[in-house]
Amino acid sequence: MAVKVNLTVNVGGIQMKNPVTTASGTFGCGLEYAPFVDLNRLGAVVVKGVTLAPRAGNPVPRLAETPAGVLNSIGLQNPGVEKFIEEVLPGLAGYDLPVIVNIAGETVEEYALLAGRLDRVQAVAGIEVNISCPNVKKGGMQFGSDPAMAAEVTRAVRASTGKPVIVKLSPNVTSIVAVARKVAEAGADALSMINTLLGMAVDIRKRRPLLGNVTGGLSGPAVRPVAVRAVWEVYREVDLPIIGMGGITCAGDAIEFILAGATAVAVGTANFVNPRATVEIAEGIERYLEENGIRDINELVGAAHNE
Image (cartoon, rainbow, N blue to C red):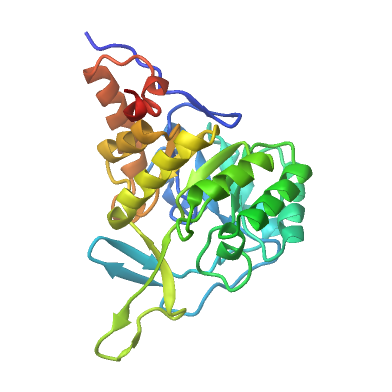
């Protein structure tokens, strides 16, 4: 007889029915995937990055496949926060899942204004602070690569909202632990890690960079060992829940992150290959618990650190 298992987790105050959510930028606003996935079966949805003003994004081409992942340089294309609140969020209101909004800005003040605006929106369960996007000329990774600036952004967002604040960290740093410590001290409730790795590709026929922005962010299976290492290191040093992500394509990948220290996981590039990946991974995690006689997913968080 199968063991009845508990899949619920709490990420910095956000209660999730299971530990699987979406990586920002890979699932649109969620509604685009509704014809393929029952959104009610997700632990949460993290929507595409939102900025104060509308953004057109970077020049095309914006995507390039690699042997083990994808390079992207979308550049935070989005309609701006007001249109997002008015036209996008209502479409998610009918679903039984927390909606986490990813925010990005060019200045500390913009992050604060965004957080303050979203703080007044009941449908928003939490805010993911993107200080790690490698595809914008101002803000993004500039903040995430400097521990002091990362803390300054976090502190400003913390002061502007009572909602849970999740800070998304970049792997393109010397020490991701140093950045994690600073944002924890500045009031973050949780961490998302990792964002994409900075990379590029060259078209050998045209003898030019393949992406319109020259460089882009690498995601997919190629980055998973880097991401698992980052989660492992930060879990040991910083007492905050972690949403782990980077190349998760199946339940086994997700469990690897949880054993390394992630409380929840986000699925990104796999959504482009298999629109049902999130639900299938949640189902696979449940089967793993049942087959191994584990009653609570939380027992596995960081279990690989045990002696």
